[in-house]
Image (cartoon, rainbow, N blue to C red; front, side, top):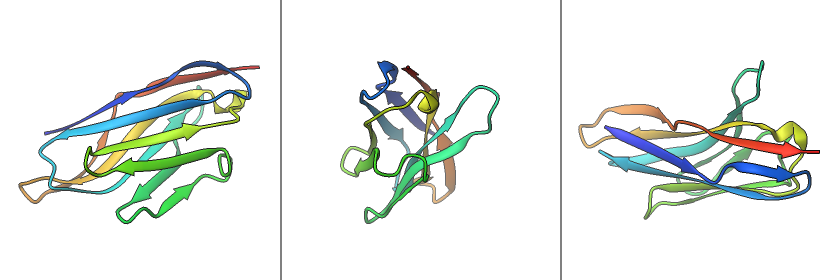
Amino acid sequence: QVQLVESGGGLVQAGGSLRLSCAASGSILSIRAMGWYRQAPGKQRELVANVRSGGIANYADSVKGRFTISRDDAKNTVYLQMNSLKPEDTAVYYCNAAITSYSGTWHSSWGQGTQVTVSS
């Protein structure tokens, strides 16, 4: 079993910053990719950013230049530094990881979500 635990959400004014963290634990042989998605009320879940083994990162156009994703493989942790936040960034942010377990099976794991609210 794999567990993803997120932290760092909260309420911030427009223009402010937040840093999200997500730590994976459990039966983990390797993690091919880790990333963040978000879902605003009434909208579909969308990719915010992800980072693959080797550090190759991918960002949604709406966050490029404002958000930075990074990972610490020694800690099986991914971070999302969010700067210059806008009210439209308000959403529940979910961590996702593509994990190969010690049994050799591959699966996509999700965190429980953390609320980010940006006030205008």
